[in-house]
Length: 291
Image 1 (cartoon, rainbow, N blue to C red):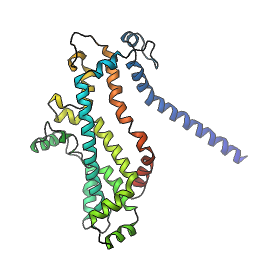
Image 2: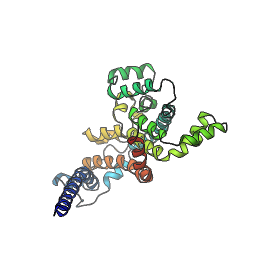
Image 3: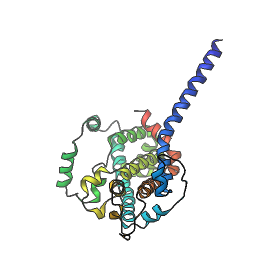
Image 4: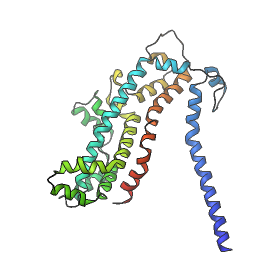
């Protein structure tokens, strides 16, 4: 009787969890489905239907308009380049700092780790950071979009913990064979760190791609704006045509253009996930569980 009671309770608990998770998933997914459906709908359909998940009258006019827009294409190329370069730089800096900190014999290791943890709790703030970037001459420079956040303290600790779990014997044997510390890092440690490398590439790439505030604060030249700034201009501007390079007399579907812009800004970064999925969970778990 006790076993049956426990079994029923367990099933009820699992069922409740599944319902809660389905509800949370719907809350996250339904708005995006609505935006995607709206991007393929006519302006009349969007205006007369408060919420829908499938377009009644399919139209590609919004996508044609956005894809012909000079500002969109320019901001898309800019964002792709900044994301690739910035992600590579941030991952390299994080790994180069995490590797020596993973060595318990490193002099002053605990002091450096305490400073790293301190930055997770306290930050300089927006104005001091802006003044520092201005003094370094990085205003209106793409470097301002990824250099200030080159090393995330949280990601650094995850990578450090991952490195600590790697077999020390392999690294010691490479050192005995005459390999330098950099040689051990690039030829031994990195090939063994594919899960955490893929995870950090994904985290940093998503962070740079979605970063709106840095471009707003540090980039004044509109020709250097990233895709997120273009999305912001389109979604809040009453005159959508002011953001384009097409015929100013043409009246675009304003709401459809906003939806299409959001979809086009989201899809590229979503396409990265399938290629890194097999490394994602393993990299996070190994790097985060052990210390």
